Length: 89
Image (cartoon, rainbow, N blue to C red; front, top):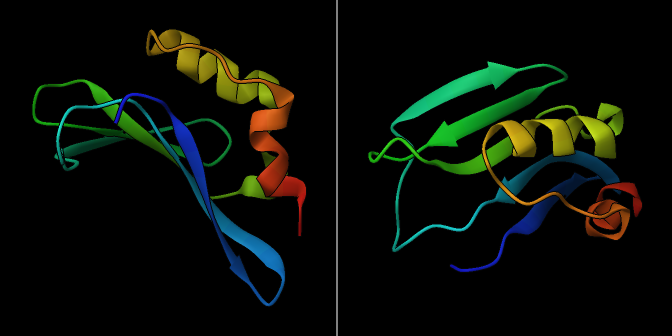
């Protein structure tokens, strides 16, 4: 997967959780996680690189918070429009 994308899980019309998939090669699986501020859990592959960010409190997520974490991981920032599915329900 070359481009990052957001996957959102809904329950009864409300956002339950989300996962921000980061670019990775093949079908890497998480072998280690790190919890960070605001209900974010970073998944790391066997090579030590981040492969995704679990968003356990989507209603609390801000663009600034996610971009701060992405910057720390050496990833490109996202735009407000990229998070629109979190606010859709």
